[in-house]
Length: 274
Image (cartoon, rainbow, N blue to C red; front, top):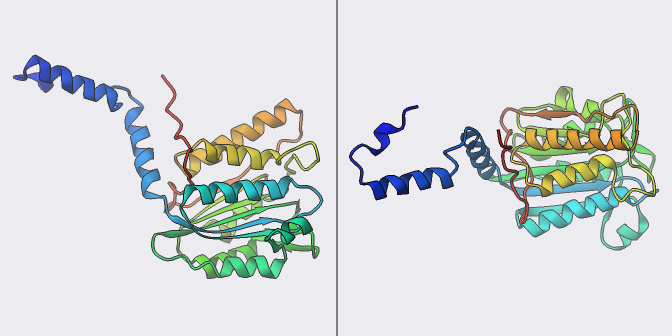
């Protein structure tokens, strides 16, 4: 585009000021309109959250640490309407968490009921089993895509909904009825693959750390968060020679592409230089 008409008839000082404004607002670079659009979408998709956070296995603390980090970030961000935290560990229940029992967890999700300008957030992190779903160890029960979809449909309806199914063999949570236009669904692995990090030497599972780090970085959209998490997981699995790769899955509804949890202190990644 020829920029000559921009300064025809303008005093030189005014022309210089306009050029400076173009540079400082990012208009001088080819990626700036995309970044600005992502930021605008992100700002519009910053609802108050009704959250259900579930750590479903007592054998390790990795799952509870992830739930606690998510809860702390949400509370610090100030964009929370309600949070209910569930745990399978006795010490966490004694400290105020609710017992991670299937009926109670699904009931909490079915009772979320966000109002206008609010959204649902469900974070489930625990072991998973092929074709059975996410395992609630305290009672040897499972949450599968069908009963999670039913609870979400009852509790959230058409409200914006963000779901994280973190466990082995969780890819089917991003398929079928779970993949609705008002939902973002992120999973830790393909339906036929394990995820990694369920051992004492890990602070968090590989996927939970990558996901939470992506949220801390302030990813501007659901797709950006999903991609950053996938890249992080792949890099860590290669570094530690974990095989076969877990290949996290996602389903991002057309109505909620900008939906992602945000909190104070998170920084929106800057576009790469070209």
